[in-house]
Image (cartoon, rainbow, N blue to C red; front, side):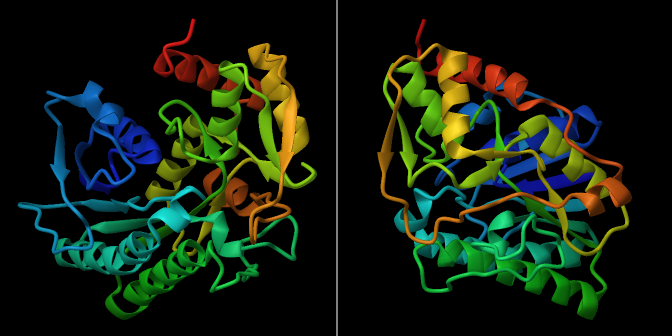
Amino acid sequence: MRILVTGGAGFLGSHLCDRLLAEGHTVIAMDNLITGTTDNIAHLAGHPRFKFIFHDVTEYIYIEGDLDAVFHFASPASPVDFPAFPIQIGKVNAVGTYRTLGLAKAKGARFVLASTSEVYGDPLVHPQPESYWGNVNPIGVRGIYDESKRFAEALTMAYHRVHGLDTRIVRIFNTYGPRMRLNDGRVVPNFISQALRGEPLTVYGDGTQTRSFTYVDDLIEGIYRLFLSEEIEPVNIGNPEEYRIIDFAKLVNELTGNQAGIVFKPLPQDDPKKRRPDITKARRVLGWEPRVPVREGLLRTIEDFRKRLSLP
């Protein structure tokens, strides 16, 4: 297949490009590099089935020739991005989704939307099944990301119902691994960067809030299985193993040998207290569940961060 990946120079997008190439497809990566970096795809330079296009997907998209699939993975996705790029986030998930859906329609291509567990907001149902409609503050600092992703899902389903577009929606839960931005602002890169520098780990609130952590290879496997499936409605892809943040911080300190301990700061606005996927549907429809234990995935990620931070 010939496949377009928007956000192809990002953390997840670059790993997706790797997987699609490994499966024998031809890949066009598109990115405006607002949070992505060509460092993530430098190893693909010169690959005969790979091409990179610098472009903002909120503008008109022109791709010469046929396309068999469009993976719309463009969007800043970290909490540090929400106050820094709110308008860009809103545009890429609204206008960018509209542009990429239109492209898929014109090319007769299958469309895969990267949605997010953030559509569930600060959930009142735990764990979160796909049938849960969420608890989102539309005017909070996180609202631009949460609501624009919810709109992207709605628009995707509208194109499916009205135009018969072949669509897939993946709701991605916390994912970590090599190539995460060092200053990403999320739990894993924050903790690992601080630990490798010998600094105390910053825990917001009292650390009893929970998260689940999916290693990137597991996530990409789930996404690829969804792509090949016939499932139209959203599917959660995430790790149902739940960690308290305080316990996760202790684990990172243990694995890095960091002796600096932990410091506590106030909890950010609308920060979810719990987040864990119900992956019953992924198991049933895709035969998928995560395989990489958190300890093993963290060791791989720590090694990647150590190299990029140029630490011994």
